[in-house]
Image (cartoon, rainbow, N blue to C red; front, side):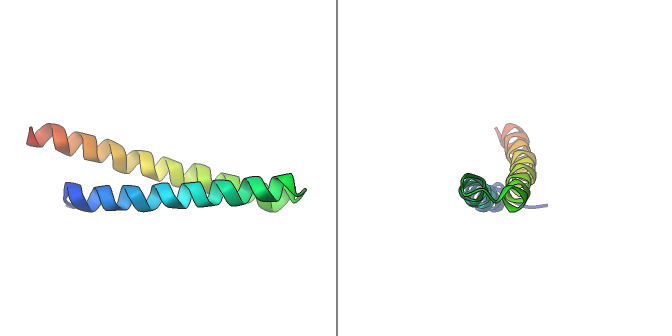
Length: 66
């Protein structure tokens, strides 16, 4: 089992990935590249779901600790 600190680091990484995919996707969509832009936006969505799972686990563990 990962520690809360390890999970927080993972959450930061996933947050940065989500932001990166989203920004790239928006740029591609605005330039007219709908297929690749949509693909990156889907990746951003999936990464955000993983982020939410990690965040839920952090919250659960912090409740157990306190």
